[in-house]
Amino acid sequence: MALIGRLICFRSGNNRPRIMRTVRMAFAGTNVSLSQPDITQKLMERIDDLKQRIAAWGKRIRRYTERSTRFNQNRLFQRDQKRLYASFERPIVSGTGPAPNKADTVAFWRGLWSEPVNHSEGP
Image (cartoon, rainbow, N blue to C red; front, side):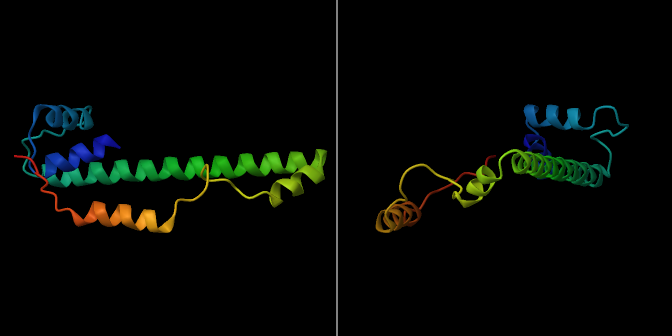
């Protein structure tokens, strides 16, 4: 979530206008002022709260997906058991096309990681 990333940027000292606007939005409706001495504590609490919300959403989506799969399999079992068992036999396709050659993959990553890169961390 971009909001968490921007709050972490603010915590590390980034005071750019876009970051400040996002931080103000994150604390909108609360009595938290950005000039308070304990803003870092409030910031950590807000980041933890957002992370917990994301985890809860993920678990809710996972429960829904599992329930939907179970429901569809039960319905298929009642209507056509042969198709249900055939669907268990089929491999799950995760990618399209054949797998890349091992030598090509190793050469690609070796070339990518062997070149030194200078990253700028900002002002």
